[in-house]
Image (cartoon, protein in one colour):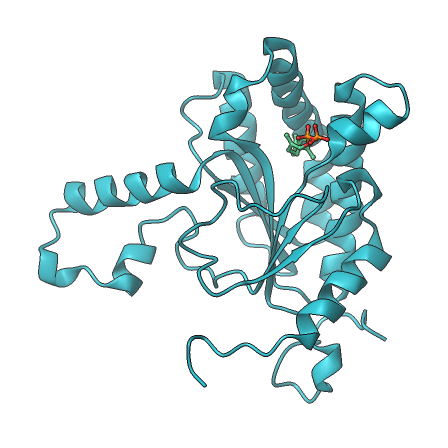
Amino acid sequence: MLFRGKGNRAGEGQAESQRAPRHIAIIMDGNGRWAQRRGLPRLAGHRAGVQNIRRVVEACAESGIETLTIYAFSTENWGRPEDEVKGLMNLLGEALARETQTLHEKGVRLRHLGEISDLSPDLAQRIRDALALTANNTTITLNVAFNYGGRAEIVHAVQGIVAAGLAPSEVDEARFADYLYTAGQSDPDLVVRTGGEMRLSNFLIWQSAYAEYYSTEVFWPDFDQEELRKAIAAYNQRQRRFGKL
Ligand code: FPP
């Protein structure tokens, strides 16, 4: 049994094969193809993708995962047709309006990774409100990477360091990480990509330096609890050596 609720973590007496990673990060790909296969518009695929987020957050919380990061909108996604960009913005706004209270009641702490200031003032405010409401929750942290790019994040960190006036000798890897959007969080142990591609696509490029990588053909709207279990089982087959023997 993989899903045992909180406490299913490394070092807590679980057999090796049953350990849940602390932090899973997911590239939710394949919404467009999922819709296309059904003769539906791409946005219907994104809508189904949003529905699936709730299911996967619940499954992760049940299995004792501390942090789930989802890649919802990349800095490159601005290059999609205007209608699709608008649709994705609206979906986030609607999802926040509809789901924040429930997430809060379930103890989910929301964090945003990316630049809020480029978003519409209304969406930016909804995000800030949701972050403030859920800031002290402890069941699971859900990082929503929205208007996020890994290289942009690194530039953002460098800007923060320069603005803080740090001397070169004060900057090491740990201090650098304090200036990333993920400040204070553990690095992902497992990066999952749905939809069959084998690319990182500018996702958590600093944080996933030692992550295990798992790619599945399954489209994001179909990635359910059983698919999550398979990803965690694959993770448990890996021997993580962090560059050592
Ligand atoms: C990729 O599918 C999916 C994205 C652009 C990001 C994921 C977005 C969602 C799950 C919906 C929005 C989420 C929130 C929180 C509002 P794709 O369109 O690239 O699929 P394809 O490769 O089949 O075309």
